Length: 452
Ligand code: FES
Image (cartoon, rainbow, N blue to C red):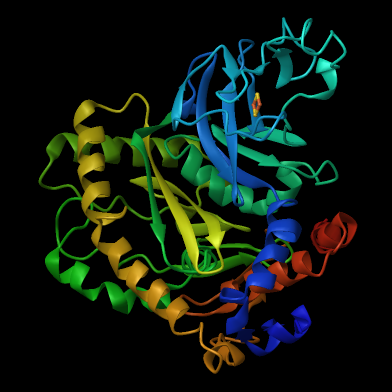
């Protein structure tokens, strides 16, 4: 039988059962309790710049269509025909006025001039003859998400009508997500995804990746070869500015976390990284100075990497990336990376970023290859009858997190700690235990009150 979730996730003690990374029953429950309820990242607005553009995304194991309707609104719908389920969009992206099913030809529209709600059924071959006009088209539209939000260009959706507004779900993690989405000067909408979306499958449980991004600086040791080879942003050795120390910052009531610096630190001096590319160097220096000038100290946060529960992560400093980890099976995920650049940056800057992304991230990038080896190895070695009975160790820094009085709901620990992973799995257990939204959001509400 399935052990109670609380027995599998003993976050306070730093013990997480290996079975939550390999077990099929757990996986099925995750799809219902986590992916059918939480706010999920589905894409970036720059992937669908024009009316009728669509981009095929995923929510959990399901294919969804992210589209911009003729009125300019972003819509998200299940990519499955209401008649017999055929996948409507079989390309990764394109431009369609209506979505017509290849199986029997039903068609669906998002045009607000034609339909009352997005995804309505507008065309049925033989409606008057074969169906004798009796089919109620209004009843057979595409399933749309319950809520969708375009937050500074990043599109989020949830299937759950009772989910709280996205900004409540995000809480004060917003400070750090903002740093990634409008890095330059805090003005939204200034970013675009370049080079398309890189997608690849990894034979590991999906949770390894967001856990890595939420604040596992400890694993840096596995990237040592990368540091020696020298593939930093400017092509030099080392990947980090050694003068900058970071902290593991987390939002325990919400399950989000990051490695970065708190806002009330002074923004450090500009650290040159692109000595070999003067034009790129000049641009990043100007961006840095503009940030310092334009943003109040509360906005001057620095994020290296962070995770929004459950499966979205990002790099918050230039060059910036957004990542999402889609579950495929207990032991396989599909990883997507999107590379963000300032829309109006000079071509040379975009080009340098593109080269950096290719050698650093993505399926062929050197850091990603290191991580993939670790995650697939750990997944594979936890599948056996003996190994799945064991617990992973997350005991680094238990009991050492301190609240951050200036930021309600925020806690901070040292650079090296497993606190962020513990709060992530504690959140996961709450979803898995079927907590109501009232229960799930009570802690965040309390933290807000206490701070007020
Ligand atoms: Fe789409 Fe039949 S499955 S029209």
